Image (cartoon, rainbow over all chains, first blue to last red; front, side, top):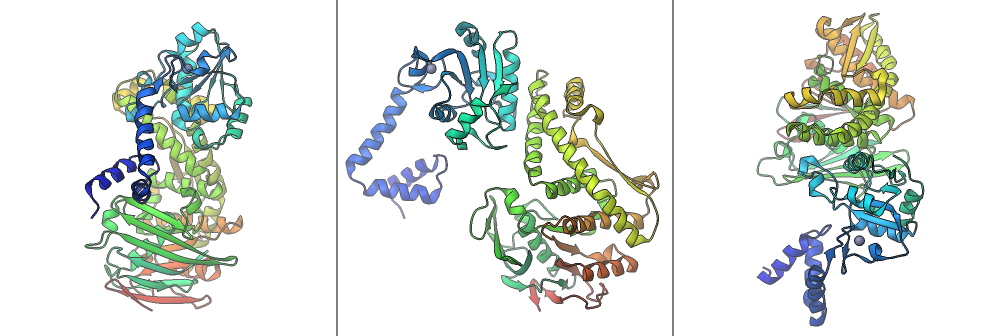
Length: 197
Length: 358
Ligand SMILES: [Zn+2]
């Protein structure tokens, strides 16, 4: 039988995405046998990330300072807005180096059967943001699965009358695939090959 | 691919065992409730990850068992392969040669099969769900992408229905997505039907000798000439109706496949015999089609043919099997029921109280 604190640790680790019983046990035993400062560093990093990281008040990406470095940068094209579902997609697109505009992070995608409607996402403020920034093009980079597709359509309709052109990333990413799994190169092409929507 | 060995553990009444198939015609005989159909079902599960009897894993677990393990050793000209399925209360897991498949579609391509059993009489007897499944199976044979199209479509439909049940009308974004996926789904089914219709007619003629003209009409719930836009329009126009009835009533989940014999709907005018011949012809057409397009030859699983087929149809089947180069597995009460002439390798397996004697 494992001691209670170890079981606790395993249970917490199992809550992480992609971690099953076996991996959780291995990680827990690794932490247990590592030098004490390693475990302390990990604990510190975990607390710090929750204390210091806040959503950017403009684009909603996770950041230490709000507005974030991207929103605050004078070198970014403020008339180009890329709408993504989450931080992971933002990082993939940033890493591709093909995009120099601003972002808007939705925090998910529409899914009525899970109770996720427009107001549970960062959708209501998009229109004002597009108007205030004077955006000329909005790129919808939600995932190419059905929920992401419907989310893109919803936002497209929302932006009618703002004067901004609305484009959708090219289907370079495999059907039914998530942006998270598309490599940066593919995403870079998807941004370059975007079309009217 | 043919299946040479089946290992079962914890499945229904079957004792833990390994069954050796001859790869030609394997006949499982035995009284009712001894386990012959269970073996067929186990092979079907390995092939398709679904049972032809139930969707509930618990029903398939042996008494007092926590886990079902099915494993098949396969062989073809190019080499050998291994499929493994484990089922627990929480769900199923599958492996190809010890590795987790990259997708369900990839798994389903390894050991394709066609099943025909007593329940298939409903295929021509007006069970539209069964007919749509038949078309989906054929469309999957045409392109494995069909699996994703179907999955996507079902998801959008649930999303739209969820909003409908809340009385929401501002759902155009879901209608547009539903129409896009729905049109793809409908077109794929239609294409598959076009491939099969002629083949079904040919087989039907060979079995019955009758000269009835058979026509298949896939009838969507909207005007198909208006395509995807037409479906979208129909969806948007029926929102009030959908809300009051609580579900989406346009789209390929409501497609109807009509079968006409000499211009008359088989549902209303067909005799029992006509239903049987046609249902059998539909299933056999999948086999012939695979052979003609050079695809992997499916395994044919036949459950209890004696309950539905008369002597004439049995003779036809026996001849068909002996001339056909795929593997056939038959579960039957009487071993003499299928009049095999011995032109093809065969083996009889006697099934008694969950175990097999070769
Ligand atoms: Zn920001």
